Image (cartoon, rainbow over all chains, first blue to last red):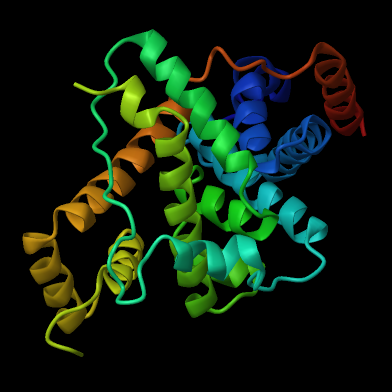
Length: 190
Length: 85
């Protein structure tokens, strides 16, 4: 593949918005997301000789972006510790009775069908994700939004697998409850 | 492992099962509990639904604002600098 077919301005034009949205969703900051896109395209430009052209450019660029996102998160993180405060362990405990059973029955969700319903769910989903504790939010979105393997996340963020499971478990319990409290069960009852 | 896990323990197993294949004993414990507990079965379905919605959202988020024009210009000139050097 000749270098001419790998036009970085083309990458920016075709994939800039997409890369920005992916980064924005995980970094929760326009400035950090812009930086991540820029770093990704510059890195892609340096690496283009190694790019064999077998992957779709978007797939290839998104792969590079994931690493830039992790770098940004790592830079932001002063220390990685599982929160021991009320938002972590105690919040989880409050969902269950002493004997380990659910304190409240779970309400069913339906299936959203229309674009309007999906749009509403997206907003709730984002609002809930924004309210997670920072470390939890980062691990959660690397897993659920970026689709990274937990092993990879642990290695990149330098946390133990056990901490990873605990953070993901708490984040999921919190997210599920937040979605239920904010109309998920109502918005999409079938 | 006890003969029956609690709901709280089951949510831990259900969550971990979203990330890796559980060892045999834990997989069976999870399956047994889910077979008889409506709440935990619902919890597990909702975790999968949540993942599906997140993936849907990332794939089709044209409604979300894209790269701001100033940033686009800045990045374009950075790329040009690098191309020229």
